[in-house]
Length: 468
Image (cartoon, rainbow, N blue to C red; front, side, top):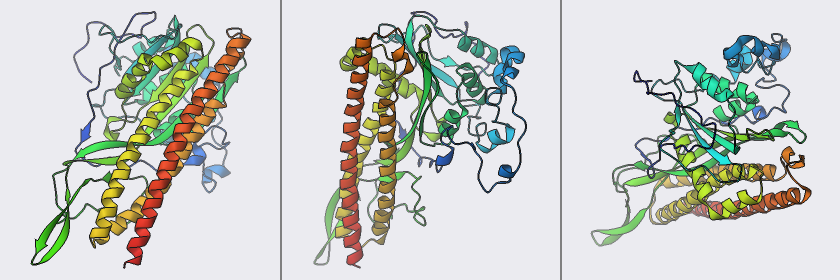
């Protein structure tokens, strides 16, 4: 936080005025190894599980918890009704359960990490509001939370959709969003704990619903390291145990030869000082699809700055570029269904996967060459580590496929309202299936490519073992 106050309070726009978030510049290069992600607890991924954040062997299963708080509790607390979330809206989410799921602990607590909300507005005609310096993103003032609550309570007009993207989520902001949009706590717990999930809830015929997709994907990031020869041993501080939650370091270079006496020996030089990591990133989206005049809403959660993952600022810029796409703009004009924007955002994970497999294949060529030319036992260990990582990547890619299939098979209840004529409803469903199939086809291509790399690693590892 800062003592300097802006001359005027920042506001969410309530009409067709333009606004802007800060623009990112290029690819970030990190100086340290990316933080590893927590192992996901899949049984706590969705509200369909009747015992949220309870384990069968725990004492909690044998005792009755505190009597659920009535949802009327929020009405008695006036402007601070959000402080009761989640128990005020979801009575079984008592204090101990909130503690177990780390809903509070995993929120950003660093005072240097500023909670900032970016937003993208899509007008009723399908056009995206262009950025403007007049309306920057909203920096949350933790000393004036009532102001943010008031802004969230005010409904915008003239919009089909508003996308909210949150950097460095603070616990009070989580409570406000959860209360304002009646969000199942599972969206926040699956996001904060990096658990892949997909589900629909709050379904009201012809009125709307809520859909959630929490997706882990693989992305390439650069990191700085001095140029080194093969005489400088690789960094294998974590080779004692294979951990698929760790990032995977990639290298590239060229093979040279040097002569010792009359014998020519191979030597591998790392040719680039900017090496890369493959890390797991997170795409966490919750969409409130509604026929209300205020329009639908997409909420995008982003891990805190210390994770060095995709920021709200970066995704904000990417979402705006969707509005610049001629292809997608035609889709938004053809159909009023805001779910198409949700689907378009999923393409970000596809691009990240594609780039990652490209770099991974180059790394495998590097590794295979060195396995053949050297007798470095570390390389054999690395091959086995990569094998485990690739199996994990295959499961993440399958989660991606299931998420797109979920969107395809979960049409919005709004389509059954009077807002859509029978021809418009049929055209929208046909178009949604077509665009989902396009993305699924690309995922299938990636799965085939990943299998080829996996087979290459298996052959290399087997050959190395046979040579021993």
